[in-house]
Image (cartoon, rainbow, N blue to C red; front, side, top):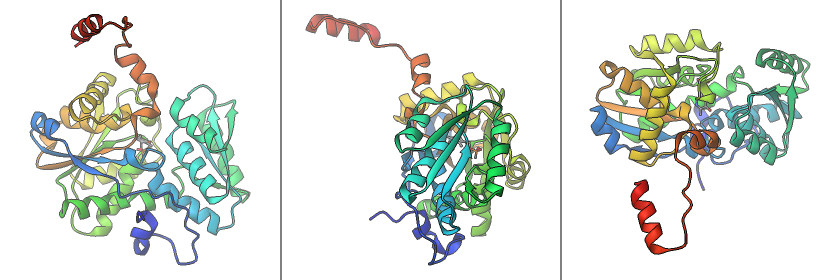
Length: 330
Ligand SMILES: *Cc1c(COP(=O)(O)O)cnc(C)c1O
């Protein structure tokens, strides 16, 4: 059986033998070489496929800890304000743990695949008439009343679970990488990765965090966060590591998204491609062994494919017509 995050790193997480473990086999994700991108970037590039977690994003690493701790504390329900991967993960782990999940979705901004996941596992999805911040404020108040456990990234157990990414990278490479590149939305993952490396005490790779130039409206919905909750700590991790926060246009992010898909066969969310885009944008910081964290799966956001690729071509069921159409499209 897969050894999941809490079992694999029991001693380094805030759990005890009394903690009821809610798990779907998260973590232990593939680390694969990226030979074509390595060549074009002039580095030895590896991709950590966090998109292969149970709900197809890295959020599961933190959610297994957050939901296990909520169950241990006697919560009956979890709550979060999100339209995205946090909602998909929270809803799924709640279902697994026998808890109710309440998802507050700010009116308007919906990512198709992610919301489908939350609905499929039976979460209550409420569309809040207000901003994200107002929805989060209401969720925090319910959490304070003790009825609902808040599993937004403010939940400290999420960071604890997410730090295990750093442990895995060092175990799998057999040494510290020179650079770790990842997307920078709210900054929780940047902060967690820094925490993981610092706990290992073997030094810190340069942390390169790719953020969208237009944080409020980027095509990369998972990093569409105007005001990052963890900015202070995430920026501090990047500074301590002698890395860099790289600001990227949507064109740069989409170009990297296409490269990952077409040159390496890795279909990810646009936000995940901010890692590769950041290396392209700041080649001075990229060197040696580099790991890009592929944070979420491409199927989460099928609308981007619709917008960025050619539609299917209609053709008669005739071999000559098919061969001709295929040649023309190539
Ligand atoms: C949550 C998420 C991010 C952003 O992570 P932060 O911790 O908010 O910086 C990036 N990519 C994907 C796919 C995500 O789900």
